[in-house]
Image (cartoon, rainbow, N blue to C red; front, side, top):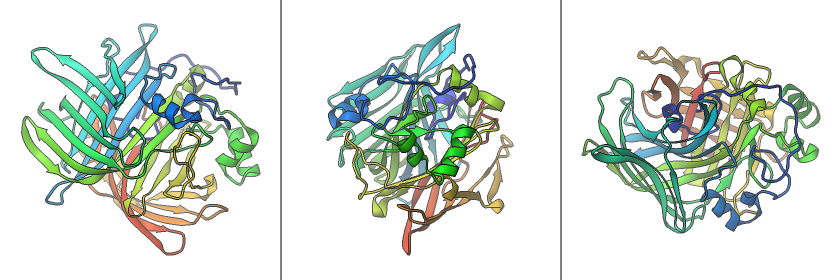
Length: 450
């Protein structure tokens, strides 16, 4: 997660970056035009990433400098040949931060690996005074962040397509990284990671409209209208009112089921994990935050969040379940969406959510007995959760139990702590449709993100 705002997805590189909150001002609804530098909802395919598969692939292969943040993130399970479950998370990110009176583009890349004994964590970049390029190629697609090291191998994190095209079902990707482990309480070592994965679904988009706009909060007057006039459906509210929610969200795209074909993790040249199974989740997020939104995000110590990126490989379905939270006036925004093989495609070729539960039909509860306190940091988290999604027109009822799969999953780097880790999922969707799989979870209490 970001030091000054919330990302609905994985975030590793930000713990290596210095972030600052810019000027603050009261929020007001704004008129927007195509190409705006803040994300917004539009019912039309008027943005490049929305109007065709070709322009969407180009969007994913280009540094989107008009937005103050662009992230590519991966997370999920690597399963050793002996059945041991490990956690891998990777991020490459460009973010504009305030430094010396100017907005400076900061490029950072991060890598996390956990075998159940705490995270190895490291990255490249992340400081405003160090300007690193993020390198893209389009054919074939790749993205890379490299940091030179004096008399040593450069530190880097990268990803690339080795078969097919980005976002295409059946495409094969490789992730590689070479970083120094800087996690708290560990001796400095060199970590090398390689993973080869296959996309079994193709790319999908969360959120609303042809551009996949995902709101991150709603204001009190919007919440009242959504609940009173639209039965808690954010989608119906946006479609009917065509409210832009300018600066209240992000463009959000996912490859939720990347099947691991091969992987190897080394520490100081010694192989510590290898195998050919597991599942990774890929997110791409693009957004900006003007002065109006920064007040909301930074108020009372910042926003918090809970999110589970749920993978159901047996049925090729995926869900986003969670909420953003604030001690300020915007309060909590719950969300739950499902995408699967029977989802429809947007104009850009990405699958859209098949079920999108209403705000008041989403019930996410921790199991009190599962509370865990990290003895090293004193922070507490719940390691088991129950989810109840009530039925409504177009949405089936669903029940899930989400339980931690790997121990010791709080990340502690450079004075920042956040819970990011792997969970097992069991439950059912509709009448008797029993499901099981994985979830990558993130937790951060409101008021602790600043």
